[in-house]
Length: 622
Image (cartoon, rainbow, N blue to C red):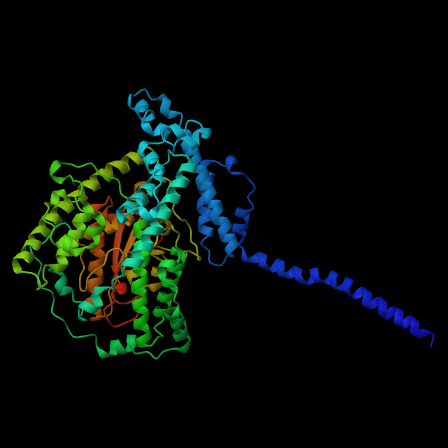
């Protein structure tokens, strides 16, 4: 009986002590969870993140390497979101430091010049503008703000009061100035903010007032076999035709076996469920960021590539893909910096200021169809638009024969002038590239060895210039123990998949076409100029151009047509850009690698892609 009080005391002591024991055990149980998260970040990323050196102690080369490495790591999908954000911030800080040093290095050179032009720049009225005054604490940098920059920054009108053309001008001008090396970092950041705000306002207006048109080829043209015989009559780059042949007659649709293989598969429930999730997603594409919209498009493409959807679901997804990809491509196109005006080689080729509103000219067909100005008075973009519209309507029976004949005649003059301008620009770029090479201004570094986790392929119209360059200089995804011939690459899917590539979707081949029209050559500018810079520093590099077709027609005909499409892109690149034919190899894959497995005519499958293939072919021999 006397033991009961002792037992009660012990029980009370145990109850009293239990929370203390529990508190000691919690950290032990939770600790492994914290440690398990660490291995998700690769060691090389941790090394970069833990680099303690401040930016001020790094050389320009080290800063450039840190920026490129951080930006590359920030695109690794396996990393936590906060780690990727940290890497992006690190890359931005390194680039900002490089820009600041370039600005600081450029400042002493201004007073050293004895030429009379230098004082005139410093005495421009921009010095007295309010835009320059906030920067007085920064020293003499504020005094060097150009007048046009100060004028732009002083424009305080709200975006809602600006017309579409004024918004477009503000966006492109601010974006161009934000990249000027001689401006202070604060000024460039302010200009970048102005450009972003103007762009968002433009996109909001465009999405609210103008529906995105669907691709016309599948609805307007009957399915016809892609026969290379028609291509022999097509115009060749550099030689505009006098008159085009009538459109080809419709051939029989794809054979039943092919249709059964591509469009007759039974729907897989899991794939159907994923497709329905995309179709039922009511988030407007114009409300998504570029990255989120790109992810949605990639997901739709990946799902359709599996060929596990019912025909009805597949067609609905194709329509959604067409609509949303145009929104993204429109954004990327608007974000491209305007090309600087080129000096004219002669008065007859000098474009004069347009009397037309650029917005109306771009979207109002009647203005273009009734444009009677001489070719020499048109800007390049106006020539391209007029050529595009006249080509589309010169066989439309709703218009008189005389009017359509006039359009064909004007097209010949427009094409000839546009080609002369393109060739003139090539000569100017060739001189500029040679000058920059002599001054050692190129900093393009090529990816070496191999990288199994190399980034996915990209669509040229859906990414910016920096990402295009990253793909063209990227290392291959696997190691090669020997060099291969073009025939071996054409026959081996493994070799092809080892190379990161750019889908050149900026040039759209019409049904059964294998040529590049003069008005579409400018759509190769972004890729062509990056390749020019690469080859200026690394002249022995080699690139692979791949041609593809859709699945309409026979295998043999499509294989021949795909080879001709690759050859057409090569001809355009070597004719209008400073690129030697020896640096480019071409292959044709026909319908072997369909982006969308369908027996119907599909624009996504009619394409050409480019990749840096030196690791496969070896360097160009001297």
